[in-house]
Image (cartoon, rainbow, N blue to C red):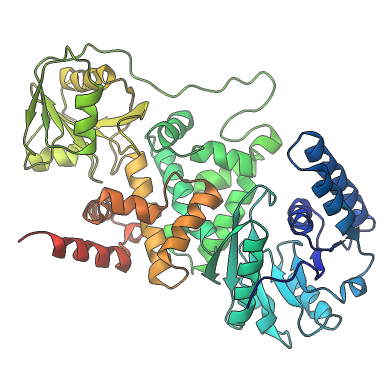
Length: 508
């Protein structure tokens, strides 16, 4: 199979933001495009706005004038479903309601040719369920664009139980011809992105609920240490807390109330209060004209300690040696049996492994234990989070804060709970991605591509876990599981497999 010929008309049903965006993409790819909406005059108005947008893009030099003019001429509004009869592909972008979508495709099936393909832009409804009842369900697949469709490169091509492989292949090739990056997925709740991304919000909400830090601090850590484009709370505010809660509940219910996907009580409270984010003027942050964005909690400056020992050659150890001033007195030492990264006096610094600092202090016999969070790149990260054991002396915590500050890090002190924010979030993202692969939802490369392009993660979670090391990811998850005593943190069989494969490579 190959991409749909650009001579074949493409119809889009639903002229909202997603439908209009998809119509623009198809028109720019050379197809005659008909836009239909059940609301009177909505499609006509949408076509007018699209033509204005294309003209604006040309005026700004973002499109050649002739390209914009040609695409504008290919766009038209359909007054009825009957006018879509000669379409080669019909993409549905109507309300997220399974009955409405099934009804639409059932009616379309009586009006189009046998070779017309159907695609649903649903983000969470089962493609199998939407196709149920069609005389020819094999012609229907998911074609999930991301908003805004003209700019976002990712398209999830989702096969239901009855989807003909040739249908998925044609849609995949068509999305590629339209300049998109498609990935293949099986129809399961949330597909790839909306499933794998759940821990990014879920772990942040749990940390907030436990008083680990405020929203601004947690967001700053995810951006400045984790390398994510937006923190989870500012992202939920942008999407809308009602939308975020609805997706979370949909995935949770579809997975038989699996605790891994359970909504947070905080989400329910904010939605009940009408604090929905940017669109309501208040969410986790305020958006009125006089609102000031809160600053992340940052430790006051502490003097740099003397007599610093740095152990091994881990990424944080190498970053400390590189980032500390030349005048700092540093002693290099081999890797330590308890995995400490640095010490000064009685204070020892460790990278989080999912245990609390207090538990690690007890198990190592080092009272002055300070934990530091994961960073995407310790060499360039501007901020790190730390947690101190319950009996860590003030002088010891101040010494380690001063050490990190001397290396150029802003330091945020966090409440001591299992797993620091970036480390536990990355481990949980990797765990969910691994489960998607283990359950045959998508290939590992597709999962990583989808999360990078669909939600802008700095790395795909599986590649990130590979870089950190599967044994480390497994250890973090195991410690989170024992710390909380919940099945939420159960380890994916795929991670177990990767762990033992990595262990088999280790010299005996």
